[in-house]
Amino acid sequence: METLNFRFEHGQRPLPATAQLSGVVSSGNLEVLIESAVLNGACAIEVRTAARGFGKIWQAVLDDFQQRWQLADTRIAINDMGATPAVVSLRLDQAVQTALGSP
Image 1 (cartoon, one colour):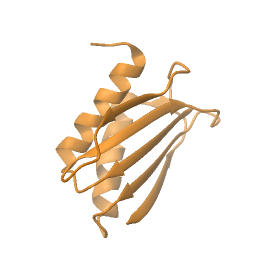
Image 2 (cartoon, one colour; image 1 turned 30 degrees about the vertical axis):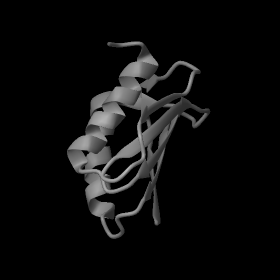
Image 3 (cartoon, rainbow, N blue to C red; image 1 turned 90 degrees about the vertical axis):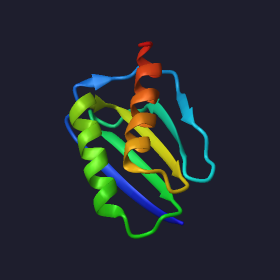
């Protein structure tokens, strides 16, 4: 397992206080836990992944995610079992949409 940590400063969109879980950890998939946290406007993301050596790809996917959502005061935990970048983006978007109460 590899643990990667990312932090994005100066977000614009805080989440409601409830935590949300999206996805299931299984072969080729991942789960995302998203929650509000006092981070001085930042979004902190911790990735635990079985696929070692993909830090640059994670960075690109998470850069794109944060650019779309501009989250502030948000903590995200990702438990990955080899999901593709498209599945990662999908699960992250699902977690945010659920947290914001969007369909």
